[in-house]
Image 1: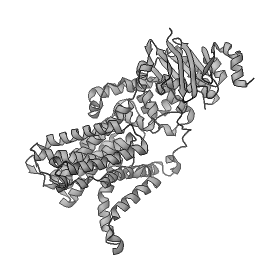
Image 2: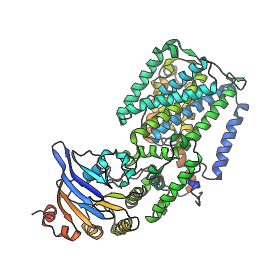
Image 3: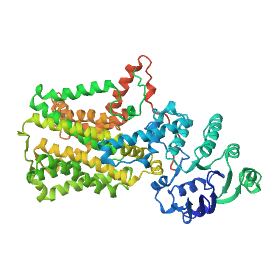
Image 4: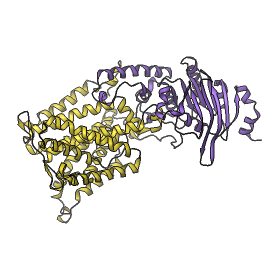
Amino acid sequence: MSYFDVNNITVAFGGVKALNDVSFSVDQNEIFTIIGPNGAGKSTLFNVISRIYQPNNGNVVFDGKDILNLKAHQISQIGIARTFQNLELFENATVLQNLLLGRHIYKKSNFLSDMFFLNHVKKSEREQRLKVEEIIDFLDLQHYRDTPIHGLPYGVRKNVELARALSTNPKLLLLDEPSSGLTNEETIDLGFWIKDIKNLLNITVVMIEHDMSFVNKVSDRILALNYGQVLAEGLPEEIQSNSEVKKAYMGE
Amino acid sequence: MRFIFKTNYDQDINIVRHNGDRISYGLLVAAMIIMPFFIDDFYLGELSYVFILAIAGIGLMILSGYTGLASLGHAAFLGVGAYTHAFLLTNGIPFYYSIIIAVAVSFFVGAAIGFPILRLTGMYLAIATLAFGFIAEHVFIRWEHFTGGNRGMVVPTPEFAGISFYDSATFYYVCLISLILSMFAAINILRSPTGRAFVAIRDSEIAAQSLGVNIGRYKALSFAISAGFTGLAGALLAHYIGYLAPDIFNIFLSLTLLLLIVVGGMGSLHGTIYGAIFVGSLPQMIAIGRDYLPSSIASQPGLEPLLFGLILVLFILYEPLGIYGRWLKIKLFFEMFPTYKKQTFKKQKTFTKSDRV
């Protein structure tokens, strides 16, 4: 058993099987990429892991715990954070406040102590800000700290979402199409950051991605899905030369 | 233009952002404190009413403006607070305890109602709260032992530090202190993890959930906190009215509260004050306006609800950010003069949003 196991997951919406008996495993401190054409079931898989969808069959084990017993809001507590394909930021809040929400699971107060803003609340607020500032430094967001999200360009928003996921201090990071909508330079930066996330922060990364040159540069291993089924799994070079994968992308 | 150079996390955490705040808000509070020496009892009463409205507005603002949940039945919580307070006072409970119990009762009623109906969203939630408002009104009518039914209920006038509540200055100060304390409580909630969770639920439930916010619990909490503030306003309102009848807490009062937060400015606590001043003075303005209207129009019943509705619609169409939003624009105009651009407040086109996650 490895660090993160997805075993025989099947998800059916009515008669459509979005995922059919999908299994794979990810080792600790690995960058694992899931590729596949549109509608292959990649995002569905992420939604199963973050407990938004309930699978019909199968189980997901992270660090020895079966996460299908948990509720959606408990997933971040065991160390899994994610970003979304269509940004899900808190639009009217500033970047700093967005990141502070990433620290929600570390709060030590309830609404009564919050209401009187007792000393320990203030102390904890300072501690959370200290941690958030580290993330801001890591992803070069200093310039945007107090800007509300709705005033930011797309690339920065993507970055803020990554930062927000990082500020939960995760062990496993799920990135849903991190490079979509980014410029070339931003994609290159992102590649460095993802490698840093793995090497410096020791976080295991599972990502969904379409940009193949980016995938090949960053990933340790790749899983290819099509029509809810696993086509192939292996090292980047193996996937590149796999005939099944080629067929799925280019046709016969 | 003021630029704040931040050197300390506390500058983000503290309530006052800079010394200018300290001076302006200090002056405002001082002006409110010396007010009874300058204006007569009638206007003092009106001002107390504005304070009461503002407290109820804070309650609804936390729910609608910050958590993004609509409520068309908030008058019910005013009623719960008012009746509980009046009932306890009648049974000889001292004022301080009575008002605290009234807030607690409203809080728990809010939580009890909130847990089931907050599974609904949007329009359905609005309808459910509307229904709750009607049901509460009928409970006030039927539960005669507790409320006196349609006969109504006299609100006892307590002695307060040796001075009777009949003295409007005393009542004014009670309302003022309640408003200031409510304001601090609301600010504290909103600058702490609880308030951030509320805002998160408003802007993206799914992201809030994935960051560990228990949606159901925080929605119910928001409803309960909101009900608590509204209950406090209700208890004070009981003294202001002096005689409770069930039909005071009707749908029209709920809509008045909604008008208050929309006109004041959704999502800002400043807005509750502006909105309360507006809503509190509107009946007076209508009364004055009647004198200048032809009698066929002025004597029509239902002029007030019509105007309330009209104003609500006009604000939603032309100034969704309310009076506070307008104030921010005016302030920016002078700060940026002569380089102010109208586009600053235009909301940028949002990037593709869909139900897919």
